[in-house]
Amino acid sequence: MLPHLLTGVLAAGLGYALFTLAGRDPRTALPASRRLPLSVLAGLLAGAGSAVNGQPWNGPLLAVLAAFGVLLGAIDLRSALLPDAVLLRFTAVSVPLLLVAAAGTGRWSGLAGAAAGGATLCAVYLLLALISAGGLGMGDVKLAAVLGLFGGWGGSAAWLGTLLGGFLLGGVVGLAVLLLRRGSRGSTFPFGPGMLLAAFASLALLG
Image 1 (cartoon, rainbow, N blue to C red):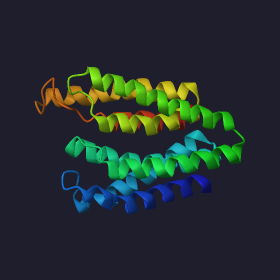
Image 2: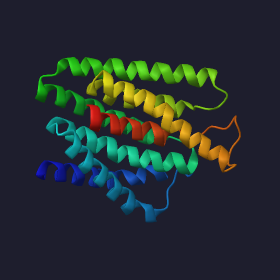
Image 3: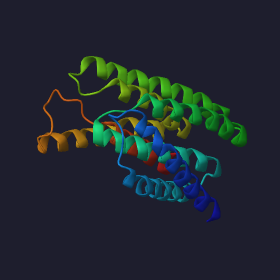
Image 4: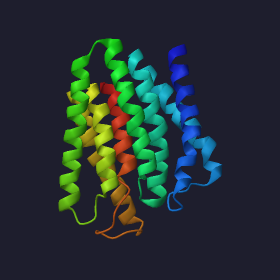
């Protein structure tokens, strides 16, 4: 129980600290009133994910995924952008944590899977971004590279869940935008929230 609680506290604290990154670009700034609710949401997700997953070394990974994921999801829903300022830090924190997890568990094959998963998911999204009419942006491609690390670390089932779940949930968001008449078929939709939710759920449930 205590490790899961600590995971939640870590995610909430990290989410609170990261919030200011959204304001570095006026286009992606979030209202200050959302700082605490988003931090609490990150903590709740991380704690619940850690309890479901049950793997101690995955706790910090879930905390980081929840903290960055909630912030990126909120930004993308509001502005349809995924800022490099957040994505770069997401990557910079995730890679060392994966190294620590591999050393702690002795699962060096999982580290290789993370690298392969990140590269492959990035390639898939890059191809789709190049052939789609504005449906995916380069921010989605960069996000896919990071999320693929988590999916690859979790194993083939978690990686597939990240891939297919991202498409499914991202499509749901896109359809909702169309139904609300906030975009056209050529619009760039906020795929990030669906991708992030799929990655988190896949690592928690299948990793």
